[in-house]
Each structure stands twice: as structure tokens, then as C-alpha cells.
View 1: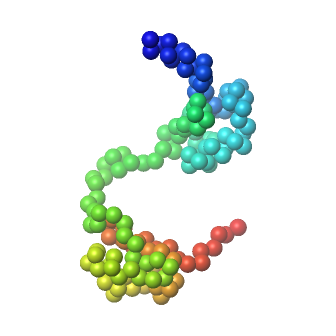
View 2: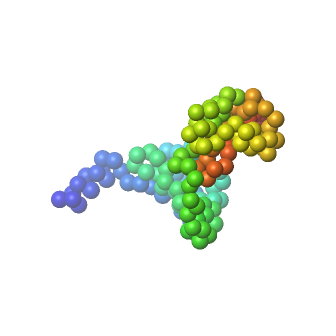
View 3: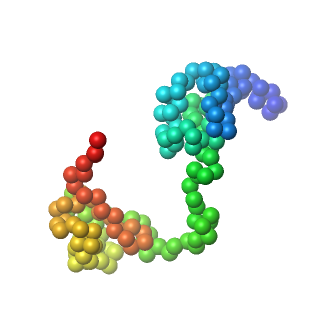
Amino acid sequence: MDIKLKSVRKLTTGEPIVVIKEGKIMENSLRKTQLDIDSLNSMLRQKDVFSLKDVEFAIFETSGKLSVMKKENMQPVTKGDLQISKQSKIYPSATEVISDGIINTNNLTRLNLDTEWLEQQLQNAGISSVSEVFFAEVQTDGSLYIDNKDDQLLN
């Protein structure tokens, strides 16, 4: 019964189509999917792939989404690959301590930190005033993430 259902499913929704195989674009498959190279590149960028040379396989799924397997040397390194043990967390989650130049003293207190600690961290990062900070949060490892105001996008 399951085999019959699979065959019916293939007739109604189709099958996944390999559009990149071993790093090579399968032009006939691309035509079957009615994708052009610009659409394929757009779908790859959504998977954090910015060059076709980084792709081992890409499959156009029946849902219209693209599944991507990067080449081995382009896959992210894991802590297991590097044999790094899990770092202990000082805090259970990242916690906002500055929003639009305003210090959240309640969150600092909850973390057993104070404004002196925060100002020292900002000074270490080359920031002279809290008003220069758009957003800052204490990370689970105790470090401080800082996003300055008025960031510029360079052309």
C-alpha cells in the first residue's frame, strides 16, 4: 500500500531534482525546474552560499525549496572537529544591558554586575560614552556584545 501511495505522490507532486552535482550545474535539470541562474544564485545565498564553486550538491525539492550540501572544505567546523569541550556558561542566556544609549540597570543587577563594570567594558572597546551604543548585551560566556549607533554601510 505504501508503494502505491509513493507512486501516486510522485505523480501529483513530482520528485526532487538534482540541479548541482559534484559542483557542476545540471543545465537540463535547471530547465526542468524552470529556474534560471539568477534564481539559483538567490536560493543559494539564502543558504549562506555565495559562490557556486562551494557547492557539492544542490537539490530542488518538491516544496520549491533548495537543499544544499557544501563541499567538505566549505562546511563549518564544529567543536567536535577541533576536539574542543563544551564551554561552561556563566549566564543562562544573553541579556540586554543597553538599548538606544540607555543602561538597563535591572538586568545588570540581575547579572550581579554594575555600571562601573559596564563602563569599563565600553572603555576597553574604545567607546567613551553609553550614548554611542545602540545595543549591548552580556553573552552567556560573560563577554559583552556591542553595536554602535550610526553604523555606516560602505559602498
